Length: 266
Ligand SMILES: NC(=O)c1ccc[n+]([C@@H]2O[C@H](COP(=O)([O-])OP(=O)(O)OC[C@H]3O[C@@H](n4cnc5c(N)ncnc54)[C@H](OP(=O)(O)O)[C@@H]3O)[C@@H](O)[C@H]2O)c1
Image (cartoon, rainbow, N blue to C red):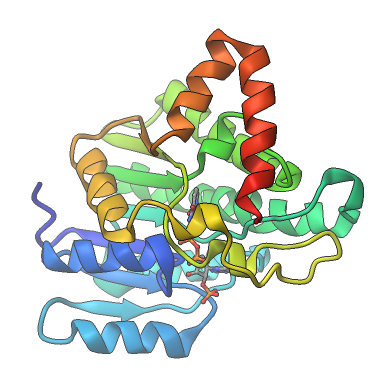
């Protein structure tokens, strides 16, 4: 792996997988742009990197879609170009479909799907002009199969995977790569901010999240997948088995997914 001097823009950099990626790319001496809504948290991250690598803080709300054209311009002007952009901003869900209000579905789609889609659309002309580019979409195993209490989240990640897989198939730009990342459970605070049926945060660290794969291991595997220009990488433990069951023995998948999803909340 060699990312030295590469310009890497990480969105969702203030915590969790995004923050893990910031540290992993900083160790590789990549030049960074870091984004999320929380400018104080981003500034604290950038201060920790001082003396290790160059880091530009660019606060952005990925649900402010009209503002993303200008954000993309600011990001490009930070170092004159962008080599890699990573979409890691996202929000989870913990509510049965029957208890979930319609605006909650919209919020999940606005951030998890329309945010990365809108920003990527603004960056494609830049990648065409400079003759190369790499977009990384942090999707989920929930982008590959249904899972209890996550109907809107699952829908948003299926949509995300659908858009980026189609970019891969269209293949209209030279030296342009898309890597789709499908993590299973990673040990982050995703369940804390996950939306419940009325839109309030779930505010609990659930069992699945707590015993998930460590963030640094997840980040290392994402860097490896990017350096190999992989189209798709799954970073998971037993969820991987569930995915195969869905394809090979669907009745077992329905039974186990239901049981596992509900047990996670305990
Ligand atoms: N952890 C897992 O088990 C797991 C599994 C599969 C997929 N994923 C995916 O991995 C990605 C990262 O999640 P995580 O687990 O690292 O959770 P996390 O620690 O909660 O990180 C979420 C990130 O998204 C940012 N964010 C939230 N709303 C935003 C907005 N409107 N605009 C810009 N940034 C926003 C947050 O920063 P601010 O609050 O500062 O804005 C934060 O940096 C998500 O897409 C998630 O779906 C996670």
